[in-house]
Length: 453
Image 1 (tube, rainbow, N blue to C red):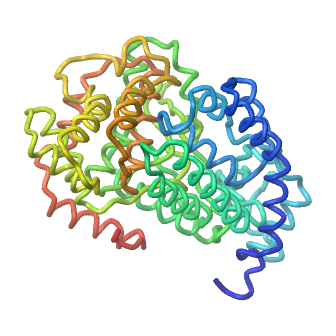
Image 2 (cartoon, rainbow, N blue to C red):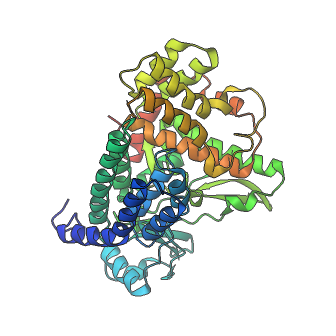
Image 3 (tube, one colour):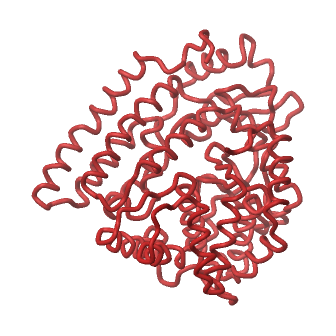
């Protein structure tokens, strides 16, 4: 990083971050340790931890949200409380915004906009969003990063490594080292708004022919490494449609399916953050018509062979082809597999693939609450691995799994009734690993993104 970058990974900022996180979390952690020692863990400590994290801007809150979406990685009461963190830390004031914008676009930055609202429209974990317009009146969403986030990321990820090391000592059935690597890599990427702009451009190209999915236009001349300016997309919250007629809910759910699976099958890329705030519903003629994709910080680009593994596992489960199932796990990076471990992994696979395997109209999981989606199956895997483990979760698998669970939870919120099997078959029709590799290469080159290793 350039020496002139005053927000590089600075020791003083990291030290300050250690102090602020420690002050908020340390007392709760001590109480949790004592409670565990005496077998009295429960919702009181979980709520205290969520409250301590909720007041902190930056990656520690983002990491907490990520951990809460990995089924059975945390005790249920902790996952429930951490899922309530909605990245709504108090916003920075007008004076901060003026200084921050000047540091990104230079003196006279306001002259480059038709208008700019100094009051944020939304506050997130790594930055805040402001409404603005171009000189021609086109509406904009300007995401402005909080200061010293790189130092905060590195400090928080160090503490995450300590937490995972403790988890491995107390829960030897699951090796979390690859999970920690993946979370670290994705959170670091979220700091780079220039990369996020390229992600948005990639999605715009891949989804250009999908009318039910809208991707905002990128304004590179008004963007920097810590300022991202996109076109403003009008829409309403998904949960506002939870009580609409089933045909409306199905239309939204089908758009969500297309928004997620189409880029994966066409370019080996997923929108990896299932937070409901990252999607809104747009309407035409007063009726819900599709999905706006709003945030592109947490995008995961896979090697095409990973998509081949997804298709192989689907076909293997559909046709009871054990050899194909094992091949898929090996392609993903699972090692030291034997018959018992494969049977354990299949518990989770049949849950994730369940709606795709049945050629009928159905809900995702009857009678299951969105916050509990996957927890029963995760508990079964947990118990089996405690007896047979350990297993190392491959790095590439982490966000695919997390995003799939998050997508299923959206369908549960909507109570949608679709033939997921036929929707999926349409996405993988004529699937070819060679063709996917060529398509991905063209799309990434056009967007200015590197190919995956």
